[in-house]
Amino acid sequence: MNGDTYRPEPSPSTRKVKKDLGGREFSASFYPGFARSIDVNGDPVYDQKTDGPYPFVLPDGAEQPWSTSAVELTTQGSTVTLYVDDPSHVVESIQVTLRGPGGVRASESGGDGAGEPDVVTIQNTPVFCPPYC
Image (cartoon, rainbow, N blue to C red; front, side, top):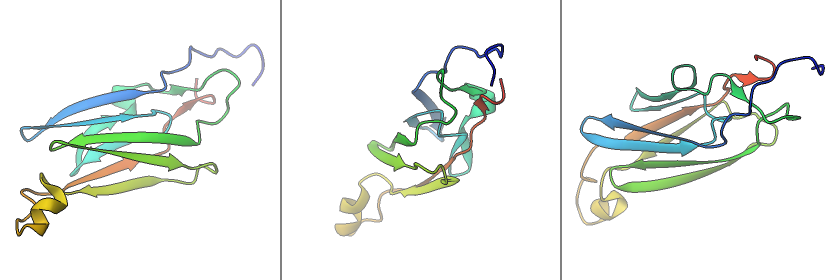
């Protein structure tokens, strides 16, 4: 990259999205330099190209996104935080299955978990500036 190349202001380091999924709210808070898309049970919650930032603009002097990231998922009254440390940038996607309301307590007490689980899929490999400014 030479000094004459235009580079927009860096993108925010945190993005929070919320979506109603069949009458219940799902939210995700994450570093948009990590996630290209987030789906819950196959339903899109976040798509970089549609929801932005597109492209994700790296800070001045950075040629790679951060290697560490936290993803906070909230659904059915529970919050789970995933910490990702990927210094070689090899994670392609992450899939997490979250139990229904009551979680393990409902199962241990003879219940069925009080609802269907949520399968959350996070796709990595967002589009970056640079090189796509």
